[in-house]
Image 1 (cartoon, rainbow, N blue to C red):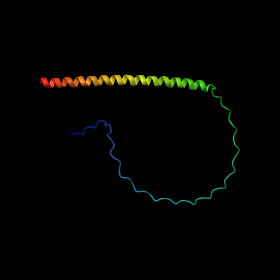
Image 2: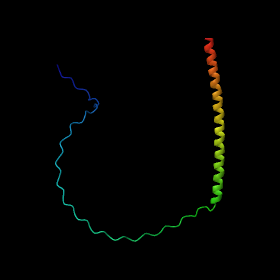
Image 3: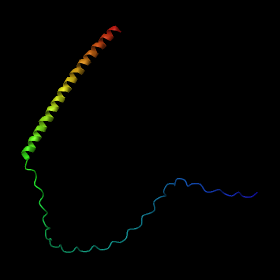
Image 4: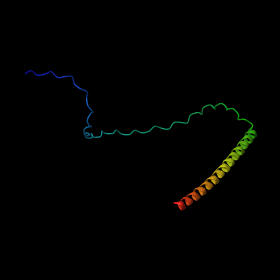
Length: 109
């Protein structure tokens, strides 16, 4: 009987885990630390940059518009509180009605 020829090799599988870590080598010798040199003199200051643009001189108008905005926001917040209060009162009424309905159902059953 003759040997049969092998087929092509398949894809490689997932590699296995890494082997154990080897031993740490001995540290080498450290050379001597040299002396530091003398400190140098302070250099000249650089040129001063250009002056920026001036801000708007309408600070009062700006603060007036901010005040108007704050008053408007405050008014909106008060309106929201009013609406929330009305909703809470409606919820309280509904809860009372549901409680009454439950009590009547218990009496019937």
